[in-house]
Length: 301
Image (cartoon, rainbow, N blue to C red; front, top):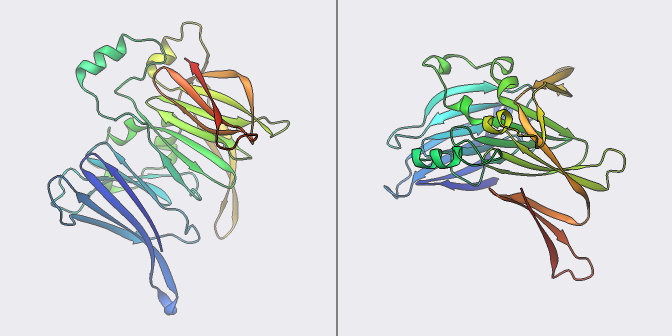
């Protein structure tokens, strides 16, 4: 059995995977999500559960989108409202993925999705790389090989009343609201607001990282002011869908962003962690001569 605990604001959620009775006495993997409102009640309020589609038994993840929405990742993205914790979470929409994600992990920005109007006015007056508070990102990483999905959260809030009636195909929501990256080896990723920091291995040697800072804020794209490269053209990666037969899939994405590549290169053995905030990039490098210490590079942006 596997368990994962997450919290956001007044909510705590415990995810478990377990085996349930299946056909012909074979156990069938299932997931269960228990959700509490710890501020207003100590009693379990809500439970979500379902079976895990075969053969993707390692495919289950979830994340909070603010204080009133929950996103569950299985072979698709399922969105629920948790605004009223006296009831079972309300199913809002199902967003289909081009292929199921394997060994998936969710990365949310460090800052909150919700911002006040006063904060909005302050941030609009700041420079090009400042996040637009009306536009946030979430990131899913999938292994074998490493695939990074950057998704604009606006798609999870601009829903019509019939969204829950039928799954929304990838080609209707995905390309314009996502940017998908692929790396043959492990890459590092950190997300803050509208900015994504990624360390990719060099394509010729694979023993060094190049660090890319990407800003997906509409303000950054429209007010570039000569800094960085604006990327608006669609990108495409190829993948394989394994079902009853092997099928080649082309995944196109086109969410625009501004890209800045740091000049320095970093040894893959040394670069342990990367992260960023509003003003700086932080790169933690190992010191193999003194394992108890390391080097922290701080870069203003």
